[in-house]
Length: 300
Ligand SMILES: [Fe+2]
Image (cartoon, rainbow, N blue to C red; front, side, top):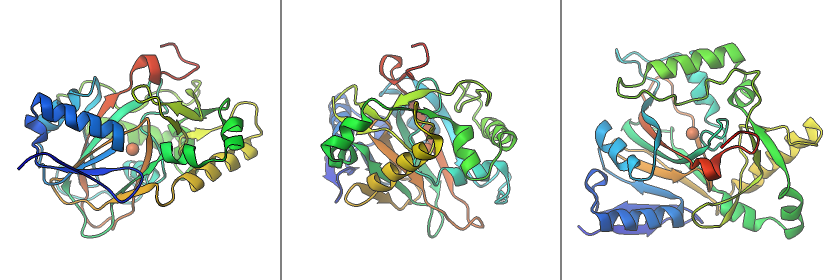
């Protein structure tokens, strides 16, 4: 079957069939890469990638900041985590719109997620097109937002869903403990809560396409020079405006599906599911280019 790229019925996203991601030819990789830049979210049904296959595919896009990370409510022994488990609170936080690693000094380029076990209902992933959102803002609003910068912190975003710094640290430790032995890189911020969080502009010009995108989400807070309450209102209002049809894509997972997205162009979130059902995902992350994804208050 030949490579087929079928755009979704939204401003972003495409379904890609007729390829094996763990055995892409150079020509197929070039087509997938071009589709990634154009559509920002690519859905690959039925790939059933091995850990090594997923890491090898991701590695064609750049340096991996997370090589192999289970995102699962199921422990290795098959038992399910309780909703109060610190790691579950981290997953709960990811039900808010966000972009990956914006709370680290170098934010993410791409994320790859594949499903090993999917719940019978719920647990979808959704993406919102921040390029289309920026383009849809009135020109005067774009001019007002363009010079603004916000801080990004996982401790801030987790506090918004009721998890304190200690719980967030416990969750990160637990997540790190789930890594495969092969993964020797830090996946999440281990930055102490009192360190200065990264500062990032509200608009991000895509380093490969030159297309501007609104760069906000749940990790963003505290716009410089603005009253905190005014900043909160502005940032949440922008997310509410941005994350609406026709700029939203929803994927209902089947085991074996793989998806990749461009963190420089979209926000994403998980949808809730019944915690009595297993949702076992496998995550790989491609680091941003330090030249273009380093926070404005950090050294490149
Ligand atoms: Fe995420």
